[in-house]
Length: 263
Image (cartoon, rainbow, N blue to C red; front, side):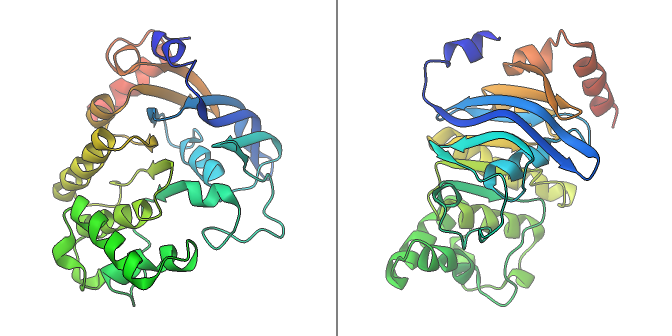
């Protein structure tokens, strides 16, 4: 156990995965995974494609079923199966409201304005009045630097702008946990920086727990308190950014980082 993990072990765990197994048919993508993340911790998940990083986020959000184990977020269980359970934000399960997620693709509703994209869920799920939802949308659009685009439609925005709106939309639900799944992978290189800057600001200013799947190692080093290296559905290295990204003692981690640097 790293010094960081040990130092935070007394904090209340916000996310707990206990012996979780996830399979797609015969393919086991998460293999008896144990993971505990304290409240407010900023965690980066790194590793090769297919190692299970994005699946972990989707399990925490309740977007995937799992076959074995137990998951809790903020003290509420995440159901193992979705039978009879409406997903994602239409569900009344408490965990859905407590977890925000930003995906690789922006997933904005093309027929709605930026403001309408953000007010939809707070009004439907949280039962906010239109006035309250609009006020909240303005707050978070301002946070991501998109207040001037409230009346624009997604097609009128660049990819980076759309992703910033997607971040504002997730924040507008005021989640306790935020999940970011390779949020820059669908962007042109020149747009990556603006999105990472927004996430960096949120990490520094907000107290919420954050998990980020990323291949941007410098970004992970800057933003994370803890880095998990995953391979074959397991966490094979867990420590501070310095321990994992700068001076890794795990040979598989070193080889992965060398490959990333060569790209």
